[in-house]
Image (cartoon, rainbow, N blue to C red; front, side, top):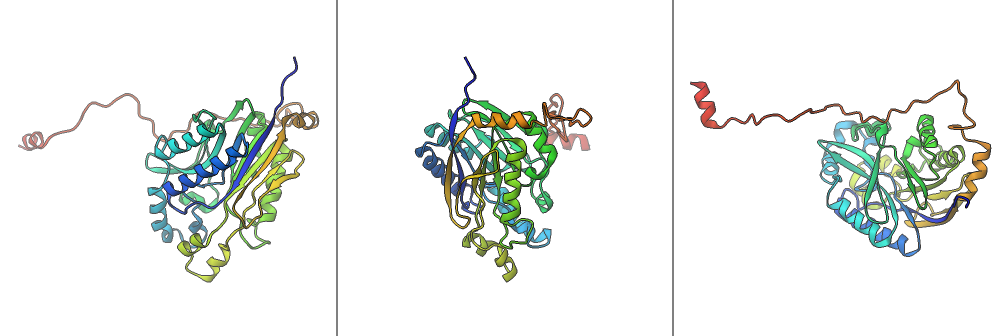
Length: 332
């Protein structure tokens, strides 16, 4: 019997968070999962840093000016496990859907930009941390490593994801290509209004489409939009307010030829859907698989999937606490 390649309905969310409010944004995310699930989606993709919102202040002013916002972001970050993860798990389970949602994750004393993946049973099956935060994002998030670049072999296809400018890094593309993903979640923040800007809709949409063509995958591209609430909270000058003009999303679903199958108007919240036929990926692999038959053996990429821990604690230390009376005795 020949191998089965399913046709799957996928959903890309375009929405703004309840800015810097983790609990309210989780509640909104769960309602969006319910909405997409009721429409028959089997995969629901969310924008970059959706919970509790993208730290836009890093692009507006010198670093120290953003510390008050960083403190608020830190207090509203997502811990794994934790109540936010539990709520998202329950939403995935009650709708029987895969969910990929990008959050600011707090691990120890540091923050990371992380995609969380849930299966239809509500299990947290894995996560991807952005390998190298882009530019001023390094004021906020630490680096991930290749131990958290999963591709999940599921009944609806091989699922993977990256965040924002990771889609412009050839080594990232090659790593995901080697893992033979079929449906790829692209998590993005909003775009900048200036059409000539590097981060405006046109160049970012072009990059998103290029990823689908190069890796021969369906891309489920999800982005945020700006809101008046975010602008009022963050902006202190007219120039800043121009940058955060409400709207400017780029949510769409792209086929392996770079065609947009469906999209959300860039200035609106909404969910777009598409039926993706995995059989259509085979023809593309006939022509091009740079991690396989179309590779050049003179050029090689080595992926180190060992966790990169800056501090490793080995064994267990004895209790070294000393009470006040013992300190007093030692002093004598």
